[in-house]
Image (tube, rainbow, N blue to C red; front, side, top):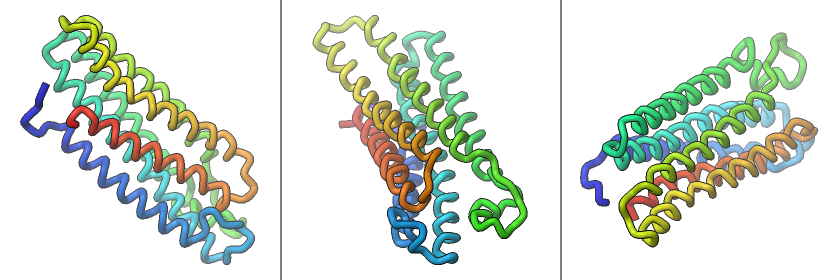
Length: 230
């Protein structure tokens, strides 16, 4: 199947790429501010700047992964739009859940601390304020994303199996959609890192692995979303 016109899947993919690019910029800027280094070797100002970058990183990641999932779901809607009205409704419901999930966690990240600036200045204990359990929020977001990944892997399989195609053609199509499992595997690894992050004692050092696997997940997401056009 060749799709000649640009659709919402293409535009959201470009948007997801731009968000991922901005994530990469914040990631490498974070390295200059101390990611991967011992927190005790950093100055007070360097830690403040690191916390600002980490705050931005959480929001950019949330929007990026939500946008990339939206692109894949919009592609499903283009390909399977005429297959079944019921399946189309299921796809739109999945898309709605994905968008609401993205919006909810973006708002939660923006409001994780009161006052707002306590997110990057509250670490020293000199300022009044409070924050929610950030690790619990990040773990919840990661777990929901993994569940959504698995659901998005199952969706096309239920339709391809009923197509009037030869077994080899079905297998090739299933393999293409099945490559999305790579995202799920990376997401599980990232969730494991997040679970270990609960007991961190050196936030700047421990943040290295979280940043790395988050970037890998977004990069793999872009590749998987682009595969149908190759």
